[in-house]
Length: 307
Image 1 (spheres, rainbow, N blue to C red):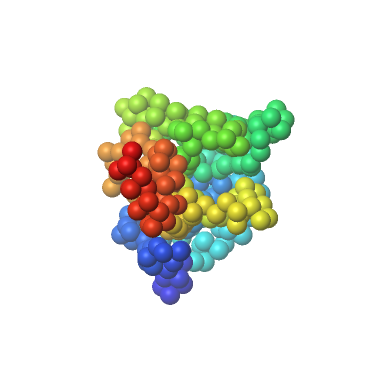
Image 2: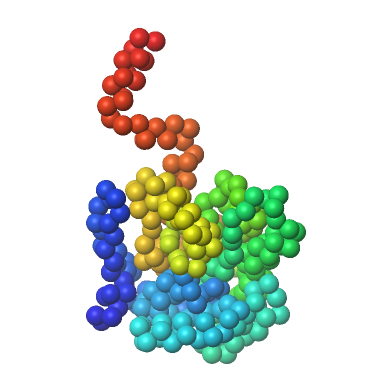
């Protein structure tokens, strides 16, 4: 237990934000017996969510293209939790590989209950500097990959009469758009549309489809690609968040675990934002006025009264 405590209890103290403790929120057997497939499950947020699922009793299938990375992650996750993890090399852009991955999951654990579409790719660039291939690379991983996995699992669940569960990881700019990450915005917007569409169409089969739109949750690989070198300091994400801190992985894992559990059985077709208020900070026309120091408001009030 001491090992798990270190993994799932984290103190955070950013700027003037209060120190908080983040712990797992569900009871220990909340996911007992469920087999969960996570694409991109060997690193970053996928690994964090998967590790928490294991502590709640789930069986785990993690996929990506690099089997060595997956196997290392699987060994670490099993050692930390005592759970069972199947690592399967799978390029989600290839539907035949997705079908083979699903077959391995069912052969190993007897069935598959949950799909977490987490695999993604992204980089920043002025759109006019992108090649068609660069654009397609992101679309293929994020949108086509999510479609392939959802289609394969959906066919399987409907055929076997299993009440499946799809959870898609999108972004807040899936519903607002964003400059300089246009391929990702297009792909994530498509995944969000698929989420809401399948929630209606497959609901009659007992299949729920939801999405999470995370704000800034630091991961080494993704953040180094998005904000290389000094850019990480110049564009510090926590300064855009009203709570003045970035997210802790356990906070996202808690939400994901709830949505793939039976406790959320009546939630279908929803996208839940977990970003500390970041996208609302950018949406309000006058929100940037937080930069005005208190003493300046006296002068502004006097000028307003005179006007």
